[in-house]
Picture 1 (spheres, rainbow, N blue to C red):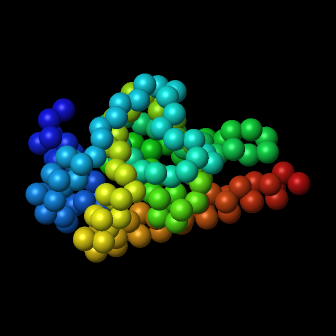
Picture 2 (cartoon, rainbow, N blue to C red; picture 1 turned 135 degrees about the horizontal axis):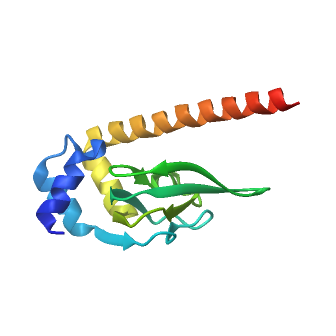
Length: 153
């Protein structure tokens, strides 16, 4: 995939939609494109977060460890971002990300990510929107799980 193709893919990600194409080109140039095969781990729950991954193609599963074993809580695809929580608040990774299909990502290091968020406030606003949507989905899922447990009792 050429740098030009990477820039076009990045421009489709809502987080980067309002950023000048020349800045996106710099982001693509300073980032690392990685390809994972099905069942490869992108990152593991509990590891230190050193980068975020933007999914350019394929699907990944979000898996959390529970007392009864691993639980897949979401499937992510093209234009989704993973790993941003661990680099935003310096906590261990909150989930394991595993390739479900062949997965192409753009790995953006913590330093580059923070520089982008600092230089482009619109990116920070979009990131807040993504995280807020995730929080709403998680809250809904927890409420549904609570209702199911109540009905089973």
